[in-house]
Length: 142
Image (tube, rainbow, N blue to C red):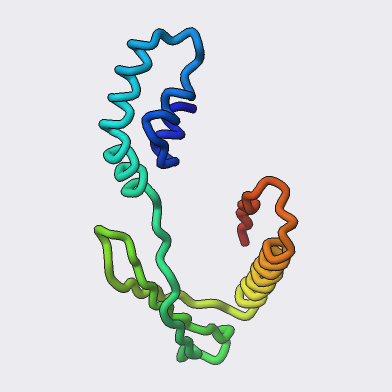
């Protein structure tokens, strides 16, 4: 807990010393406090550098694929332009993929579900009804 508070919270020397149990000798508290203060900035920078930054959607275009034979089901070709704001990989990324009608319908249902969940989170946040101050983290797959 002591390390976590030093890394994730900007706590002072006095606040650090208050976190030690009574059993820790004063001289050991003093030395540990000095070490924690010395490396606090470096540890915070390491945490920030290790965080994963997801690319953002910058643009989306689509068109119907040219089908060479009439027997094939039509597909839509989706082109996504993503903006990557990560420090070491800054730039745009382009992703192309194709969807048939069934896959598109499945994807749209998932997107509507995402929209509804985002609306629910916004409503709960605006009403101040979060029980622990943290938003729930959910992962859904198609």
